[in-house]
Image 1 (tube, rainbow, N blue to C red):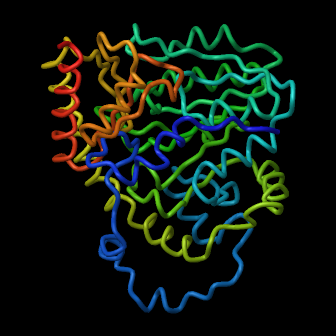
Image 2: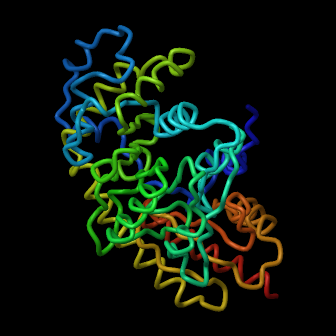
Length: 371
């Protein structure tokens, strides 16, 4: 197995830490440890009692139960905690997929969801999101891609980078299509709690026995540095994941699980303020795009905190993004990181002042290209 370099991570590796203004992120504004303790009433004594023993292969029982409640009262025995949802995705795909398996993925999409199955030697079929449809998924197109040979369908809704999502009716139709083919449905729900005008989608594992859902603290919770994630899956599949994990990370740190349990037991206190801020920022972004329709073409994101506008009249978007960073100190993600070279990813989940300043500098830089 040989993975290709991830262009998104290569782009962010240095610039993320030196940007004057970051409007690239797909997550909300991060919390500090002081804020975490205040929101959870976690005390120094709670930390001092922690013993740094090895952890449980599937996660501490109390933490798995907290994940289960947050996911919609699923069975805690079906929960595995991981070092971010990326580990969960890698473990599940490694356990399920083999060379030659037919797998449907969404494009444009996050590199792990697309490239990992490719590296395993799977035959990839692309479910393309069309900008002419404002990126909204065409489930009829998905139906045409699925065959009796389809081993897995890998999706991410609300979606990164476009911000599109599906309705609950469309989710149920996707479930039905997977069921008709006997295919596994891997559903990355990292942005599940970040929706605008509609409630969060139900956890897909409550609807289909061959489904796996994934969650994370990196997007809606504002805790990317905690590196905490999970999956909900059939217990037999989790056993296979543990056998792979025995060769890698073994378990999540007890410190991370202590903090994660406290956060999950107070989830609304973390998610709701950031969702409110994102909702406000989204309106600012849409107003900005409408005022600069000669410079950008933007479909309104329905979920998550990233948008994927097309830059009008910019022949080399990579070079533009590089110049924007070097001259204006503004970090965005070129769409080439998602195989969409005329677009950029803009994140609107951060501080409002950063967003407004970043968008102003972005507009000025785009105007400069016209001179």
